[in-house]
Amino acid sequence: MATINKSAVQEVVTVVSNKRVGAYHQILLNVGDIVKSCRPGNFVAIKVGGDASRMILRRAFAISRTSESSQYGGTMELIVAPHGQGSKWLCSQPEGTEVDIVAPLGTAFGIPTEPISALLIGGGYGSAPLFGLADVLKSRGCKVDMLLGASVGSKIYAPMEGKRSVNSLKIYTEDGSMGETGRVTENLLDIVRDRNIDVIYSCGPMAMLSAITELVAETGVIHQCAVEESMACGVGICMTCVLPVRNEDGSTSMLRSCIDGPVMDGASVRWDLVGKVPEALA
Amino acid sequence: MTLPVDMSTTLGNAWFPAPIFTASGCASSGKELAQFFPLNQIGAVVTKSVMSKPRHGRPTPRMAETPSGMLNSIGLQGPGIDSFLANDVPWLLEQKARVIVSIAGETVEEYSTLARKLRSVSGISAVEVNISCPNVENRGLVFACDPDASRRVIDGVRKTIGGDLPIIAKLSPDVTDLPAIARGVVDAGADGLALINTVLGMVINIDSMKPHLGGKTGGLSGPAIKPVAVRAIYQVHAALPKIPILGMGGVSSGRDALELILAGASGVSVGTASFGNPSAPIQIQRELAELLAARGFATMQQAIGYAHRDEA
Image (cartoon, rainbow over all chains, first blue to last red; front, side, top):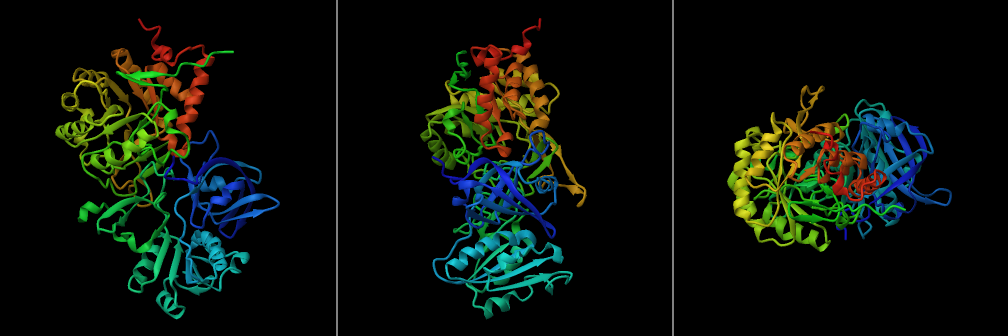
C-alpha cells in the first residue's frame, strides 16, 4: 500500500499540441484519466531527450491546467520556458510525439470551503498554474484578484481565456514594457488591505515567495506558495530538493519540495536558511 | 518453450527470490516507490544509510546533472536509527519486502552502536555497512579509503552483531588497491561486499565561477560510472571468488545488470536509474530474466562471474 505519491502513475502519453506563446511554449498532453486526480499546484515529471539521451533525470513542470474534452479526452496543459537542455527538448517536440510522464505529483493548493477573497501572485511562467487555480476558486464563489510580474513583457504569461476567471488582473514588468513598472510586491500591502484579502496563492521565483512572506507576516493573511527547488527524481527518493521548514515545536526539518511541496505554507519556510544547514545556526 | 530462469540468489546466508535490489540512498525507505511496483517483487529494499542521530545533511544545491550521470551531495540526511527502526522497518516488513539495512557512522564506535540496535530487530535480511559515503564533512572519514580503518569498522560490527546477520561492506572505487581493501574487510568478518559507492566529483558553475554544490564535492552516479563498477566487481571477484558481491553503479537496463553479474555480482542494486524511472528496478529484473533465458542459463547463479571462465 502506497502512502506517498498515492495518485501518481507512470505512463507514455501523446503531445496534442505545442504552441509558442511569448517567451514560452504551451504544450498540451493527452493524458486520459490522469486528469481526474490532478489538482491545482500538482506537477508532472517528464523524461526528456529520448532513449539515447545523456540526460538521465526527469524534468518537473507545474501542471498549468487540465480539462476533459470530448475531442481529446483528458488533457494537461504545461507552460514551459525553453531554458535548459531538457526544457528545450520538450519545447521542440511536435504534435504526436510520445513522452513518458509521472503525474500527478506533489501537494496541491488548499481550496477554501468558504467564498473568500483570494489574491493570486505569479512571477514569470509561475503564473501558469494560477489560472487553473483561479477556475476552481471562482467555481467556489471566491473573489479572485491576480498580480503577475516578470522582467519583460514577453515573459508575462496571461492567456485571454484565463483572464475570464479573475475579477482583476494587474501586470508589472521591471523594464516597464507591459503594465506598470516595478515588481508584484510594490503595493502588495495596500492591495491586501483594500481588497480584504484572506489568502495569497503564489508561484514564481524563490526570492518573490520569500518577499511576499515577509511583507504579509504581520497581516494574518495565509500565504500558500508553490516553491521551486531543483529536483532529481520528483518522487521523494533522492533528497536533493529539500527546504528548511519550521516544525510546530519550533525545530527545523529539511523537507522535500517534491512530496511535502511544491505547495507549502510560506510562513513555515525558513527562507533565511535556504541554501544553509539548520544546525549551523542552532 | 523454455522454463523460466531461477532468479534466486544468496548473499552470505541470506536468500533472496530475485537478484535486483534498490541501492541505498536511492529508494529512501521504500514508501515512495511502492506506488510504482510491489516492493516484495524485487530481491530486497536496501534502505538509505542511517546514522545514530537525526541529521539534516548538506546545504542545497545538492545535485548537478552531468553527461549520463549526476553528482549528489546529500550528506546522509535521515531520521536516525531509533525513528527508522520504529517506523520504516515495520512498514517494509508489512509489505512483505525483504530488507537490507544500510548503516553509516562517523566513528568506529558509532557503527558498533548501530549494529547493537540492529541485533534485536527481527525480519532484516542483512546489514550493509556503508564505509564509503563521500559526502561527509571530512574526506578523511571515508573509512573505505583506509585499509586499517575499514577493518576496524567491520571488526566492531561483526563482534557486536553476533553470528547470523550477514554483513555487507560497501566500498569506494576511489582507491589504489581495491582487492586489498576488500580482502581486509572480509578478513575482519564481512560476509559480502557492495561495489561500488559513488565516485567523488565536482562541477563548477561557470556563471558564479564557484563549485556548484553546497557541499562543493559530490558523488558521481549513473551510466557514466558503469564501466568503473564492472571493473571493480571483476577485479574483486577475481581476487575473492567465494565472496558474494552486491553490484551497483549506473545500472539502468537488464543488459547493464547482466554485465555486472557476468563480472561477478551475485545481486545488482538499481540506484540513480530509479530517479529517472521509478519503475526501473522491476523493469530491469524482467529484462534480466529474458536475457538470461536467451543465453541458455537455467539459473541466474550460473551467470555469476561467467566472464571469468577462460581465466587461468
